[in-house]
Length: 294
Length: 301
Image (cartoon, rainbow over all chains, first blue to last red):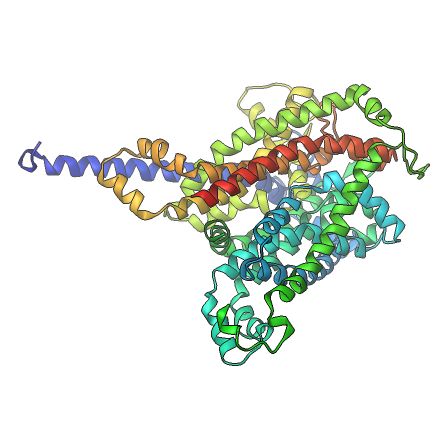
């Protein structure tokens, strides 16, 4: 077939049709995924504002306010439960875990990325492998250890143990970020008379800001998510985090405070999703940096 | 490191000392708080230690024998395997599709991304709570829709029957892991050099052919990474089962992690709990082998 035979308008029409079909596919797939992902949260969002006399009628339309919405259940959540304590505990643990993680993972990641150790590669993989030993395997002896050193029923137990999960992953992530910073920068600083540590703190660390943000987000997410240690170590309400407090405390005997429960979930999930959505591109690029340049 | 050779004023300028100084805190922390309990977990499994009797009396394989003889354990082992396999097959298919959608440009992408991320970023136990309410025996909105459509007359009672309870647990695991897996696959899609896409476009390959003969083979290693994460998350997570069914009805959805917790922490039989959890180890070693192989293959490339 030569170009003279080519029916250009027909080809263009075909390309156009294919393009439009592709758009239609993209939109319908996007809507479908969004619907399934958000479905239980939508139901939770509606439930949290419903009157009990509306919610607990089997044949009422569950997606409609058959009676005017109410803030009563949110009031109950904030004033009559330990919800705020759980949030405060989670934030305190997240903060402490962030600090410990940064203090230990930053230097380790720097050493792995820059110092060309003989056993560096192997150590890097070993650190990553620690992530493959899940809390499920460790929580029973860990609970004994925590009890023996007298840290049960305190936030300190979680502060001590969570970095075992955050350090390996953060070291791995930060290693990728370090590799993304040109070596010349710190060599130049050292030529200018700074010590190596001086070059690191003055030149390299400011450039590590995105990596440090990633670690902060990760540490806080873990403190909000972690379930098995938190459940095994701490049983009193005053030292529970949101992950264990909400599912165990907003239930009296067999009676679930459904509306308050759903409110508690929505008020945590939505801000977290907003933060992650804002940082998603950074994470994706951070992940590829570790993977491609590692 | 030649630039610093002529000017060694600080001990910390020596890469060797610096490496030791920088690595040791993290390494010591991990050895003390992962290595030690890990060894302890193995030791416990050979003793009959319990909260009532905290002595380390070695009983050899007796603990394992007792664990293995328990029909609930065998059910938990099978369920763990079943849940991980089915959930992760679904995750691979859905996450690859979702990643492809999310790398395209379309209106409202911000909102779609936000909604799609929700299952992953919400704490697992809280996400499970929304499902517990969505699958409620009386007030489930799914049942309401099915009733309105005339498809059922009686409620399904999702978490009350063995088959539907298992399906529910698998669905919730899948629902939760798909966003993470999609983000990982997205990273892989973005990393495919644009020259390859251009070459494929010039060659006039259809989008389906491109997908199956170019994109997916190139993505295979990163899909494997997503599966590794997915498997670890399904076999080691206990909150989905713990919140939704607590292993019920009559242990139909019991998995190793919940059974270890119920035996070891709630029942106080530390030795048996540790032995149950140790059955995850072969799976984890298998996964480790795959990770190491992938890491090595990346070096070859």
